[in-house]
Length: 398
Image (cartoon, rainbow, N blue to C red):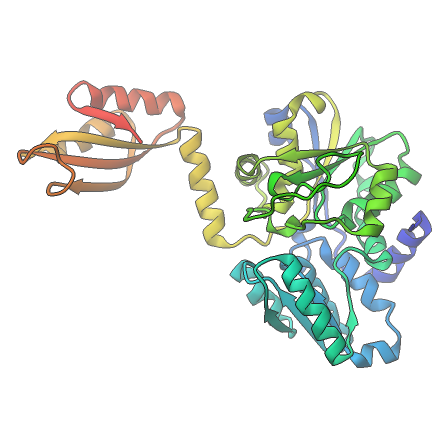
């Protein structure tokens, strides 16, 4: 099991190689959650993720002979970029195996650091099996993304910086994929903040510790917006640390992660990927556990595909009523669209999209169906707009 000395040695080893990221209070998130929220912004690292810490420490420890052999790793994106960047800085040849579901942005950024990217496997387990086979065939050094003491110690440097900058804390809430970050931070917390609650978070589809502190369970797997922690089985060495030092593990649904990404963007003004927003998702899902507590939340990464971010924001707007999608039965005669547009405008709504169908869905040859998407200020305003339209037309919400 790693110790505080290992974490401190890692901090000295990687100093100047990674960014000491800011620790900031978030008044917007505190107001939204009822907790006193402090953010540690590792989405600002050069590769956009905390994973750079563990990769930098591991590669710095390689012998000259190991560097000559080259390295290989498997990752859904963030560890891949960390290994690729620091291998390039040290002149080490690197191969990165990534599951085929990895977001395009992460694949592109990894290749941009100079590593050879291999897309293989429909799951992290399949990608890992391919990486192991390739490692044996090419004689490379395998850099495990989480089940490695050097990587765990490197991730623990996150907590050293946090504790120096944040002041008193009641709780630290961190995501669990393979367990490298939470285990490294838990070791630092146990030594430096022994009274602090350490809480882990997993998403429903990859909740191997949902029975914590009992035995591991086999989660269902499947697609998740938090692909950075889409690991079916936690690492053996991180699990030992987590069982010893972590207070509890919370499981959050997909919708909570989407809502957390949106709140992080709108409230904290930070772009976060799914895995990076799971700590906030836990606070939103279980508010009673965090009310009135000073809570540290790591924004572990910001490498979210632009399309996924846009869709997530739109889905959240639809759910909370700020986007209103209506279907209307209207008479098929001149001037109707102008009247509807005028009614929406006078009510303060902003038309985003309109679909006007005469031939296939209208109930009568002299009628038409109109589908309109409207931007409203808030849910109450959306109801007002719908009420104005309902005075003249048959309206239903989609």
